[in-house]
Image 1 (cartoon, helix red, strand yellow):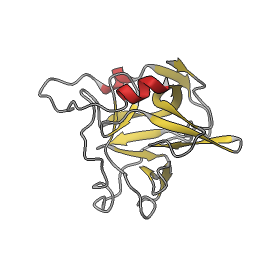
Image 2 (cartoon, one colour; image 1 turned 60 degrees about the horizontal axis):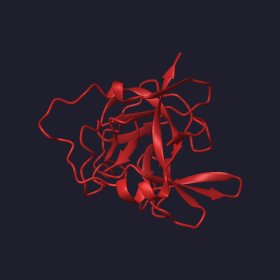
Image 3 (cartoon, one colour; image 1 turned 90 degrees about the vertical axis):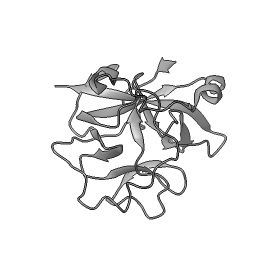
Length: 185
């Protein structure tokens, strides 16, 4: 896999100081995939991060897009901070993401979700009406975001920028991983 531009249009921007989940999460934390997170994946990370796009070979995406392994295998889990394989200096205006109890949240308190058109975006809280998934996120030991067992997402050209989706929605979509990028000061 080739690590392409840590901060492309797909990178999400800003900074989380002490954002916490809203008190009433019941309206969206049940919007989760039916499959468990990949083996060893972390559903909480006590530091903020960004994401970068890593191109995935389409043949490999079909073969490894999902996994049947369970995260809770009874073995001790590694420190989720060790899952961060890429770092960059944080810039003003760069979106910082926090993962807490399998929910992604940005510095404005918006919830990372897959909405009705399959697009990955931040809204609310609560997430956009009709959201498909708003919880079930994790970081795999290889340092990529997963939603349920899925770690392959799609980058789709829309004019002169890209949107991110959980499945291919058009011919101009290409499989990617969402690489977790840690921030340095």
